[in-house]
Image (cartoon, rainbow, N blue to C red):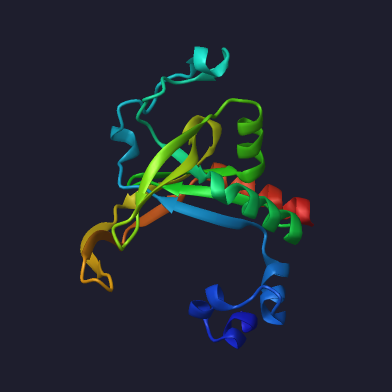
Length: 202
């Protein structure tokens, strides 16, 4: 794509304002915006994978699972909700959240996620995050059962886990896991959703 080349390549995209003419050219061709997360889990081995949704008292009788259920979910942070909606509204490009596990992946549109939140099907949970410098913060997030999303893909070859680390300015070493290689086959359900978006755009 000439617009990407004019910007200096893919590596320059995160540092280029969207008001740039080349970025506007790229956005004009985009069918969907993707917010992608990954998890260090094998979805099919999670204890509540395959569990049936049942009426829950804490959800006012709406379908769900026990509060501490362990299963594949699609996660959206509370702090990201408004920026994602604003970007979608400003650009007229639908946003989908994709969550990739070692063996499978799921997706959900930001519009469907908002509906589930506003109608009380998904309640916020609090999670602790650790920064490279060692500081911890508590963030509110929403975990959408994979039942509410669509199957995105299945792993043909799982990624390798490679040990890496970051050293902060104080000399503190923070180890982390880096993903390398791996392949995934996109499911027909996801391709059909992309086709529907394309057809709607005309």
